[in-house]
Length: 168
Image (cartoon, rainbow, N blue to C red; front, side, top):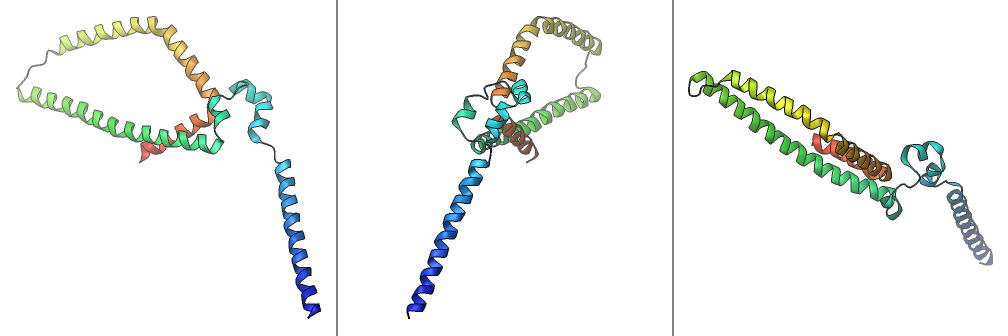
């Protein structure tokens, strides 16, 4: 009977040793694993590409949370964009088709020379407008680039989600 108790105690002792060894190994691995975000922030290429501060979202939420937030919002935006885009394309295409049918049937007469003149006039106005809007556009692009650099994880999640939303 005593031999049986000694064997049980020996097993329990070995089990505790193995559990302690597993915990020590896990702690050692955890200590050796480098936090990738901190490692990347210390790299020259990261700082050159994304700047020294990776943004407020990176400080508040984990990478998984940022990807989830970006992915879900991107999917919603992509889904809505695809549905609204299809509706707009159908409306414009259908309207043009009906106008062409009505023109060919004789219900309406289109003065194509006047249409061409108005389109050329609109082109000239657009050309003038793009020259004036360049500084505003440049500041918008700079602000957008700064946002993307500060929130790269959320932005990449949004882009992936947007593409998935467009497909679904």
